[in-house]
Length: 289
Length: 161
Image 1: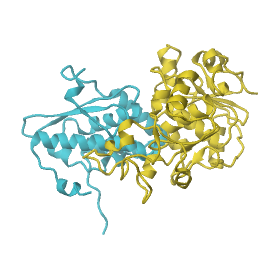
Image 2: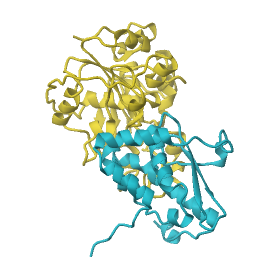
Image 3: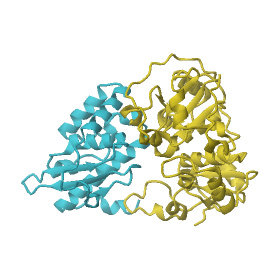
């Protein structure tokens, strides 16, 4: 039932080229049986101002986060979210979004927690589609609901909790926030001391690799060669390493998780979604500045 | 003894009632309409964002500036700049524009700081996204205080938080 892989030459070099599609591939396959396209944005209204024809909105706050606890939805709710979008376990899902696919990568990562087999990102996201002058619509498609199975969320493989990070200290950590956040300077916003975190800095030993280094100016991913130069040659990471990536709330680090896991083929990367809003507020965890 | 919430200015209160009268889904639609109705910057500010204050609480680049007339009421005028790719933030600006533009300075300063939560939007857009509107309101009030030489109430206490 899966749709064919995008055989674009750029993708062939990546470790898992089946995880990306180009705008040209998507334009060609829109409307195909077995394909559902989801838009996942930072801005909850952006989809409503115009979207790729046939696509549906998936909001990370209201659809993927538990409304009470700081956690993701459970298997039953996830099944509803998928089912009401006409997604089955064997559907090919392509996700795209604003801000260089931060939230699209986040949504893809959450779908990975539920083990959805075929979920891909649109290289370049919403911005690339718009920049190429491709069709957008205000029309929200009618969906025939499906019954998506209730699958238990598996947090063991690609998600790290604070305790996991404490046990991981000494092994590679990638801090994908801006340099100012990494150094701790950015918490000194005099007017708004109540926001963000109580402490500034980073988790001891973390390497600072701002997430955007993995993207070109147009939001598409850099080539494998360019990515290897950053993460492997410059930062000294190796595909066999156990790596934890984090940011402020886990969305930018989902982007880096995607790069390391699917583009460079690292096989033990976890995203610490608690990130600095947990670590920088936690009592007696080590902080480096 | 229960705390009675501080009353909102009339236009703001009416808009809040409009939001509460409809479903969550329609609230988003209303917010989208307000984002589309937000006036563009007048020529004296257009392209001159350095004359405006950036709202850091918004993840998108949003700028605002307040003017206060020299009339008896010290009438307040609000100007915003927000990108089209940030319709939610632009909608928040639209709410504040419809609610507060043209009011006397004293009325703007009297708006309770929790006003952004009175539109039933926290559930529709998620509480985390409300931060931008709270940031805009506090910056509007601060600019009004600056331009009218009104001392900030409780400012000394805030420094110790």
